[in-house]
Image (cartoon, rainbow, N blue to C red; front, side):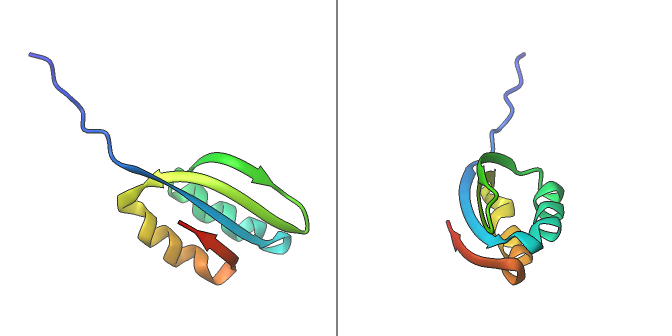
Length: 72
């Protein structure tokens, strides 16, 4: 008998933040095993990544203090 694994629904989130907040942001993203879609590290950094829908609300809550903007 073949077992099927349920694939969790993913969402893409785009954030922007000041370069000085990079360490804090990256630690949080790493703890959620985010899959990076795109990155741009200038004085104002922007990043798109993919996480499970179940994790997205908690992730956004943890990132919010460090962000300039967020698009879900």
